[in-house]
Length: 108
Image (cartoon, rainbow, N blue to C red; front, side):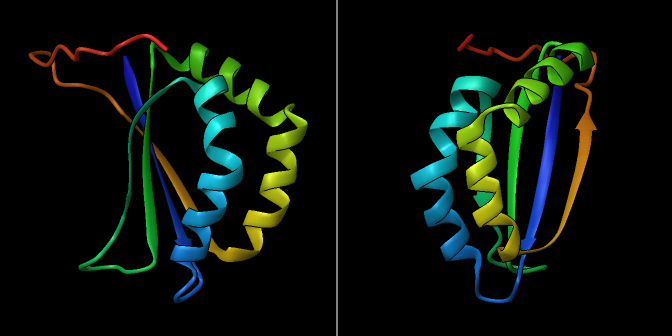
């Protein structure tokens, strides 16, 4: 199991608009295609204007397959075209669990 941590930095003050657009247009598509949303957050202290979301996958192959399907979805591509102008930057990292941690994921 792996978790992808994606951090989006919006232009100053645009995080509320980003979250509203995501809830209206991106959320249902990502849940359907990506499956295991671990969490979706915005920052309040420290580096501001950031959205952090976490997605769990069995492995990198599942991640690649699900992300490829996402990028072929016309509804998601339309959402991305409206969302990208709100962003200043993006980053992504893959997190591997410690050997003693056994997550209790519910399959989508």
